[in-house]
Length: 195
Image 1 (tube, rainbow, N blue to C red):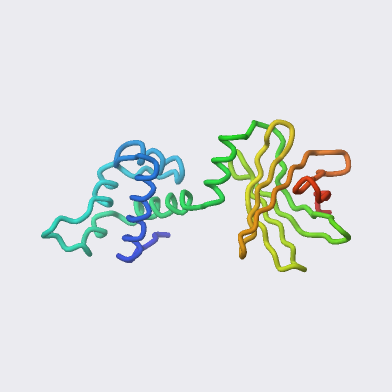
Image 2 (cartoon, rainbow, N blue to C red; image 1 turned 90 degrees about the vertical axis):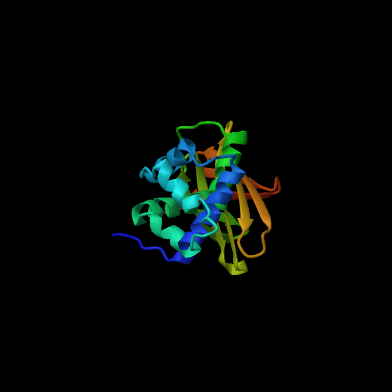
């Protein structure tokens, strides 16, 4: 199915892609084209990227610039921008580069945090070299979202409460009884596989 983009959506994509290029020191060249292909599986030619990102000339109608890029290329650019604009992905990739160590163990799954006679649902989903983690503390109306990396012998989770932004960290490792967690080095909890 072909995606169609309004001129306003095209301009938003253009601004976000320029911001990404500036932040990563990229020109409109093969490196950007290769990153888009790696992220989306679609090769956007360098000339197409140049046409899309180059601002209109003084005598050119600014509303016409988006018309010169085909919808398939715009779709690839949109998917790429969505991936690189994802703060969870950026955090996971950064923390993994900084502190991560490789592991064959995949901790993806549905779990429960058992704490103080309460049980909170937890989702852990693999995303490349790190995992996304969501903890729902429904009785307190909190949802924490963040990343888990493997660092030496333990898994380290860095989470942020979605509404108020408070931070939470967990360190856990596999035991025979489940995944043991020690949050904030004080709040002892058990991360148990959901049955």
